[in-house]
Image (cartoon, rainbow, N blue to C red):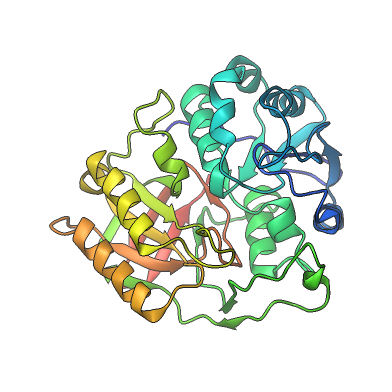
Length: 342
């Protein structure tokens, strides 16, 4: 995938904050404030979009206001990176209203995960801009007492630090968490979340494969089926992030996951890709974890490519920053996932 990659960030560069979907600042302003402090500590300055701190029900602001914020950040010559404050489920409302000529003429780093998947696809498809599935202001940079070092180091390696080797190993974090503390009651300011030891990658199907990276969060990927923003997954290494369900802190139900996997199956995703990465799951019972693995085996049955779970991607922390369209290699024999980063 031939995509444009902006130059590395320098100390003093400005980062723009947008809220393309949810707007949770009014109920948890401390998370935004801590996120800004975290970015300041690594030498980056912050520009908050005009409507990024608003809340209008289940979205931050109107469609027109959210679109205006994205245009504002891309047009601002001093802003070198744009990061979403948090995800949601309504970034898809913005796609047909964006001026892709503005974005293509003013390329810069664009970072976020979960529902931001739909914006990643649109910017890749319409603007040939390399975007990044990575940490957000409220969820990672706003963490107490500070952003997890694994998440931060990945972010710095990708966007700031000049790395001699162009091969970056995506290794498992030493520990991980999916605990949720109530932001509205500031429970997250009372203690660090409880972490558990990471047992490493789990290879559902073994093998070795290499390809360009594509994927994102279900159901956000599925929102794009049949639209002009869909990207052909053929020969790609595909990653899937399973978000929370209706219960905060818990994975979506096996029933819903099965339905979304069926969508991807009908779209020919499982039959056309060269490898599959599954991000670490939110809280799920042992019985449901077993059912989830059974689903994975069912939908990838007969296809000769590696499938790996428990990768630091998405909704369970910490997370690795993934650049769309870069070459990634899966190797179960060496128990490695390697990013060829340019």
